Image 1 (cartoon, one colour):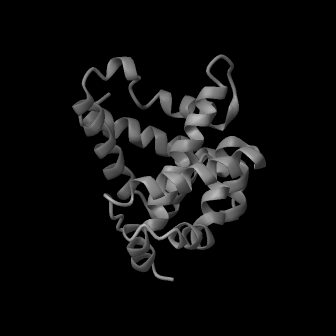
Image 2 (cartoon, rainbow, N blue to C red):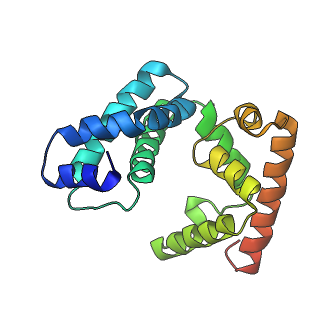
Length: 184
């Protein structure tokens, strides 16, 4: 079924929309949740919460890309679960990925206004969009889907070390870009 047809089912409040979304994109979003949470059961729970999140947000939203919309909701639920679990302890994929980017992106405390945070997000999106395709995909897999360098390396035929080097160089480029833009 096409995305536009699934979205139409959501607008009609037809529960078939949930089944179709899960059938079409469930495995993809489950993998996203599992990468972040590292636990099959929690990923399953997260996927169900994300499906409910899509149900509750469409309508009024009419996503242009249902796969990305569902993935973003899944990712947000997974990150929320992980943040709750790791509130008092260190560790996990989110902590490691956030630590890697902390040397490049200002902390929440230094971002005084939400408009500055929005501008930062827009600049990072612009920066990522201008990266060469392989670099961009590696960056997104690491910092959006929280995949390990080992998993990314398997997908691209690179060693984990090469992936780490690419990520390090990309973070350095991002830092220079943000400095040039006056956001670092």
